[in-house]
Image (cartoon, rainbow, N blue to C red):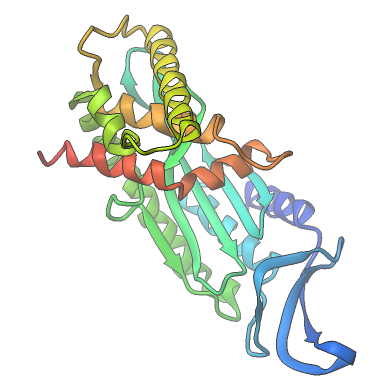
Length: 296
């Protein structure tokens, strides 16, 4: 094992220096039940939104280390990582900047990010190739693109399957070229920003409440302000009176609004906001509308 891989393993182990343990849940007066709860060993905080059964196998930090090591080997050990816990383990794998793709000029670039998710919701582990856009600090995934997301079944002895895991992440690494080509095509596709937003956030009807109309108006104003600022920083210049932009821009204006400005619980970290944005309905709609332009 290389020194770089050992450092990766140490960082995961030091960040996730606790276990998630399964304990039986009791009813009134100590009545036995067939249900179990998951709890963090360091805080005894509840993990997950529902109970599990006696057959549920809790994954360990070592499983997460194995996944991260495999990702590192797939990128020849040349990665950094960020680790987060939010109802499960998340590892943000950051390959070297040599994988950068330029989208427009010198200020609009994308860099590969592999997000590893090991949750406690009974689903398989997920690893997804996403992108980080330096212009707006967006971190996002286009899971609709074939090959950019893989499921990894949680089984005992995950480390014993390291060769297979490395091959899985090598395949995921190759999807960066495909994702980069899609992003280039989105930059070349022309859309009406007004029509794009109407598809993502339909205009409230005449019977809508005043508060709903106000939220819609404020959100639209914020997104258009974001559009003007990002076009200036990227060197694209002022938008015309017809408000036509690239599908890539339109998608990221919505993504940026949801990731950075949407209302979240107090204390939500930047990574928590990113996780919420991954599956936000508005972001998914924006992705679908933008990608539809490539087949129009």
